[in-house]
Image 1 (cartoon, rainbow, N blue to C red):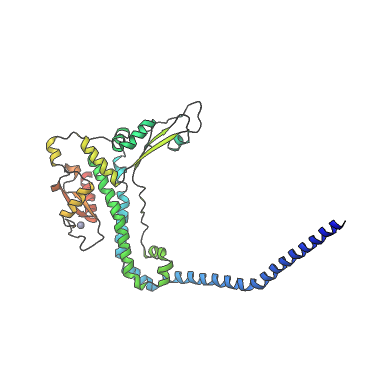
Image 2 (cartoon, protein in one colour):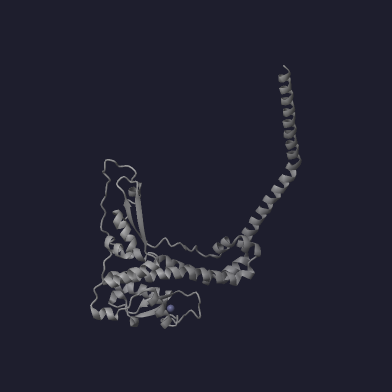
Length: 343
Ligand SMILES: [Zn+2]
């Protein structure tokens, strides 16, 4: 009986302590809730006022004047951006030949754990192969790429990939040049833009000035996959070959080595690699051979290498037949040749 009394007393004390604590928290809240809400409320009001300020600023006449002053530069940037987006499709242009499509069904009885197979169904850039082919592809990528993805080892194919390398290099350079140009435009107007806008709304500023988004990802490089999946699906390996600038250079050298050249042509022909591009630009003093605009006048100018007599008209990749053009002149020339060819 005494024991029970003791327990009851203990419970009562514990309950009293808990009630005391809860009440303490409650009064603490009551005491602080008003200052807290005032703090929170004013923060929200400040934030809303800031949003209003930003909105008013971007619609103001002052901002309009700044924007109008640099419209030409911005349009130039956007035009270059469109141009490099076009160039990203360069590889697709040489592989548009349609070979038709069959459908492969997995009819095996123990058809389980074959997710890897299903995932790539319908893609022409994945080759299902044995473990040893997958391993060999890893060791000799260009050889296996040509063999299993039917890339012809002839002069036409070489020229096509040289063009792809040319275009992709322009894309990679173009992306950097647009970013630089954008930075220098922003630096020029920097003193006229309020600090708060620069500090907290730089993205919105870029967008409101009229700059289009630059896609700086390099997912446009085509990639080819060798894939092995064991019959039970428990083991698998992959070899992915990405035709980025470095691998395109490798591919071009590989194709050149494999082509059985007639001696006279081989002696004349230059290989359109990244090195040659740089040599030609240096030879032409980093100036456009058509409009004479150059890096000295416009540091962020995209320069390209052009065949004077185009490949489509029998022109060859030789030093004499190559020249440096700025992207604008090159595009104009390309358009003219397209129209001529259609006529
Ligand atoms: Zn030019």
